[in-house]
Image 1 (tube, rainbow, N blue to C red):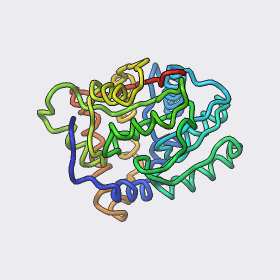
Image 2 (cartoon, one colour):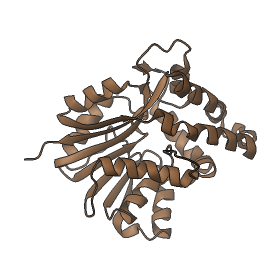
Image 3 (cartoon, rainbow, N blue to C red):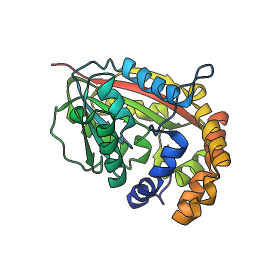
Length: 276
């Protein structure tokens, strides 16, 4: 595991409060990678990631989904509208919650979604209240990942699934410091390896159903984002929001190189709670 002791929850919350307009500009409605094939446009690639994870998790209409780290509500709204789920989105950022609520109303998904502002590591939710705990690129920001997966297992009904996509530390040593630089500049307290994630999920009492490494299929996300930063000149505005935002934008190349060298990987996991 790669760790960065200097990251704080206050920094993470402030980042997403300030960065939401930048994310909307650079990524669109979804704050996550895309799964790329041929010349798919970015929005289609991001939906392909949602569909890949939803398929592996066997999501069906009428299920209750907890979207942990829901961001601007993009995945929550997709799961509500296209999959017929009832979705609770959870974000640390009050700005993102307001954005998600507005988007759900605008897209006709308000009746099947609700959005909460809270810390996934401390929020109180009823046990056995969800069929799916959906977590796409949020676990990187969690400080105690094993404890979170124990909480997630308690929130699941029998037969429920954790559907997870995560940035991963590579299995070798981080000789060039790329993964450590990603942790520091993208506000990740730690990056676990694929093996560590499997261990945490299984220790929480969940049975692994699926693991796929998708690094080569998602890394194009950062080529596009890097190009958009350069073309939009958003870096000229970033200093107005503080030094952390400038560092964040300046390290897109670092993350891309971490994928290309194997210092980081990208993984999809589905783990299941035993049925009664």
